[in-house]
Image 1 (cartoon, rainbow, N blue to C red):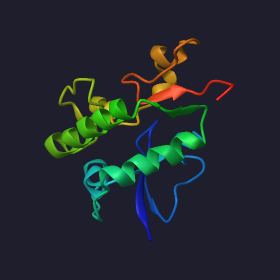
Image 2: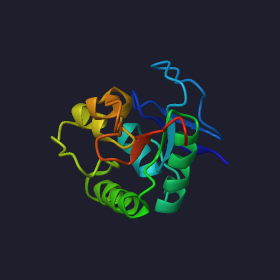
Image 3: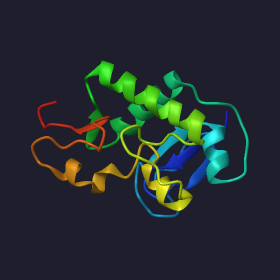
Length: 144
């Protein structure tokens, strides 16, 4: 079954049975996460079925499994972040990070869609705590 996938670096949308291993637009590896048709429609003009919270949570688990990061082990925090993302999708059309303010400038706001390009954020580069802006993703420790 075909699904929509979005590159977390450049917001490239892919429609297929699985995501590309390397984004053809920005050449980032393991950069795609499954998105709803609503989100894909806001990035390009296509339609399909809605991705629910459980499906999105599974998709980001798969996304994290291939990287140097993991989903925050605090399940309560993750649930609140997912709730905020889905509220943003309902209110603004995309799963914007729930802890950052959109500017209502579509091009700028695309950088706030979760998962964002958190690997470039200073909060992620922090060697001790290393996490994305809102804490959904954390650096994997070598002993984990």
